Image (cartoon, rainbow, N blue to C red):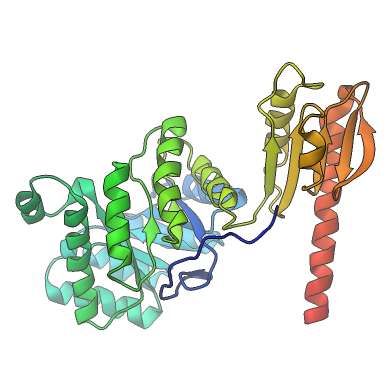
Length: 371
């Protein structure tokens, strides 16, 4: 199941957001954004830590005021994951967070103001080794572009992005990434495809304001999936009107399904039917909840009967096939033991965690031999 993805990724310039490489041959990173009040340091730190535990590679924090910039510095000192500061209009906020150790600045050079202010921000970024993210959004296009195009269009998004990029290129600053987000899937996909052919910098993918957990997941999966299948995208954010942790979960599931990232457990489970010999849905819900902390890649199949169960189990690290009077467990594709329904989830969780630890020890041995 860990076969290499057939997707050929677009070649892009690599930048670094803190310790995380973005672009080039780096894995596609997954990020989210805090929705706490940035002035509430404890609440924001707690949410960032939850996101990191869920697997977030990068976290963005809104910094709308100079007071928020000061608390951002305190937040940065207490977390490990790289932080992006989301800044609009006031260039002095960007200069301050650059001093306080921000890992990336999310700005639109066009709304920072005069050329000297843009130059000051770029100089601070260059001096501190900080990349910039240009974020274009269909809901906040420049007034002249709204007048020119009449409404948001892919061409308008791309023109806006190129306008902002021109600011940085004139200042000989190539270390940036770009997003051209829209809530309309077709618009976003068309804009990203066009921009991907025009620049070498990494692209931050997102379908903005996608909706609630279910609808937003579907919309994001379709839009981002189309782009990722094209090899476009170096970092992603799934924008959901939901707990930001859910954005990380959906993002990783998306990348795992395309074999672009292997992190955590990849469950293969049947939808259940009258042939099932155990409660497949209940078992899956419980397993996913209990094993959220596992980050080691592992393929686990949970199939309720013997029609497809053995075939799936032979291709996974651990496979459960429903049977009567007991269910059959496969490990590394071979029959290993039988489990009864009364302690099924407990026993299966134990087997999975044992396998995870076995893989971790093997990886530690490889690292030790290479060092």
